[in-house]
Image 1 (cartoon, rainbow, N blue to C red):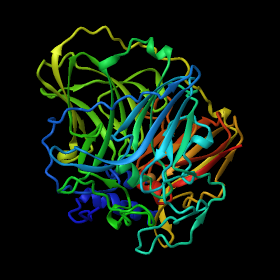
Image 2 (image 1 turned 90 degrees about the vertical axis):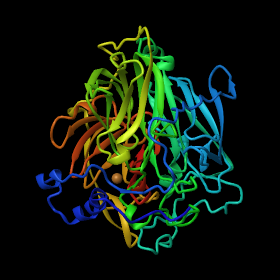
Image 3 (image 1 turned 180 degrees about the vertical axis):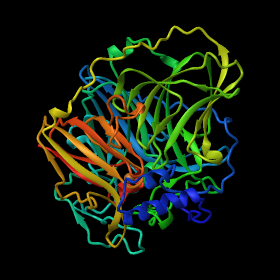
Image 4 (image 1 turned 120 degrees about the vertical axis):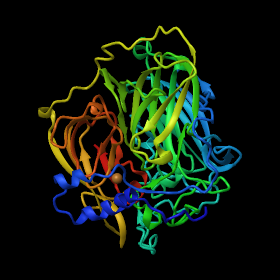
Length: 541
Ligand SMILES: [Cu+2]
């Protein structure tokens, strides 16, 4: 890939990077001064040189639902080939992609609660891969641990060594191969089994390869996975064409349509990491929804269920729905990362960190036929303020509803249930002689036990951040007890698997580690941070 533009950073981008390392030397991490100059986002923004389309011209694609290759009564089986292809993302240009099944986003998998799904992934890409189902309650052997790689044809068989996590000091990659004796690699293909023994919600599957997750997702390795059950189906929420999954992700493009990404090693074979201006996170200047730039969707003047995923590597959003006459439509949140809330929560705007999902109902009935309802990002500037639009094409009858009580099955863990409390600081630091991102002062090492917890124990984790860090736990959902020492925010309701820590902010979460024993992870879901050390082992025993 061509070199990205590394000049022309705005003040905000400089803050995003300078803030990351500047805060290291600041002792008063959570001081009022730090909070007052909290930047809107963390990362550096690439600049596209491609001709970009005006907003709201390209139709919103809806990812195809994958058909099972067999349904034997007890389980559904699927096949996905991971392969290179090109697609027309910007009008008139072809963009080379790495895909699940030839499309970006990959095909959507529709699952039923309690009915297992097995997906056979075939790796026809030039590099190893690992598939993780984000938010899945998944046995460890199918959780896509970063060293449990599927090796492509011709890849040297060296399962227990990896390039080693590099910094960005210009001599990374040679820091001594890291070893992981527990890695279970396969060649060419691997079966991933998902029991779907969990609350219905929108999950997503994406690449989780050691050191190279961020560029692999950027190139297209992400898809949706929806778990449903009868109780949710019976609620009367907007459904069919009025239930719309929206995968939001930013990217940048060269003049010939290729994706720009500031990899130190554009082959993604040897040397991990990104060039200096982007170590705090890679932001694009083009907002894609379901793989289309600033798309438009024609629809009815009726309630819609919008199932949002922020699949961006580092970009945060604060979303609003705005009518042409300047009104903000209510965003009625009915679900969080891990499924339905107890009761709807109405927002005027809604923040969204990388990997978070929001399940929303928005009523377009008050928008005039022919008008646009724009979804905008209050944290963006210039063209990154626009996300997508709905064109209200026709009046419609609407028998959908939003029940005042959505579910009663939310776990209700209390502080006194916790058998221990742990503290984790998510901060910038030095790693292998370069910049890194550390949890508790240490970069990820697959061979080092970090957290070991007996199956069934309930714990409180206290998390603190220097810059934005969306913290994600594999295997379990959690509840947010406090944020910044205060009660949680309205969008912290429900069951979460990713908590967005803002610069200088702390949060307490509580969860019960149930499901399966085995080796899992917790990590920052800023994908660049994740690749540069900000992961740790979570072993359930
Ligand atoms: Cu982070």
